[in-house]
Length: 167
Image 1 (cartoon, rainbow, N blue to C red):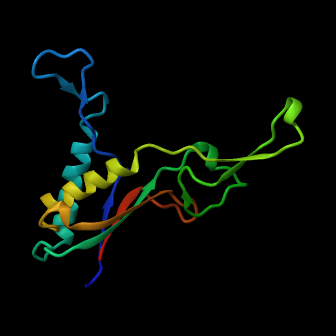
Image 2: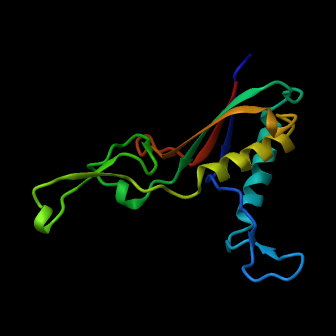
């Protein structure tokens, strides 16, 4: 099967999940907690426009492997001279911690904390967008879904975007 590449400019966002109220009446009550609930809708509209321009084939009807690279804005604390100027994986890598007190002779290694948006929310939003844009017939055709969250490169300056690879 051929491999297809698509790119959508803009900050990667995750799909909002509806929440349920703790004390509900019969039938329940759901809501979204994020005050930026329209952000995924705006991203989806922009992505639909971009993907529709890039995709001129009929929808894929066979099983596919979906690989997403979300290039996010680099935080200020990673913009110092001592940090690499290229892409950095978001929220991974060992962090050396030197404890104080009675355990001062030991050195521990911790994993970096994760970064927002969550991978599964990005994956779901991209899958829904690909179905609406006519790239995939149905999102159940995604056999393997990979996602890589990276911070943008500084030299040369890279804009935030989402790279989509179907194969």
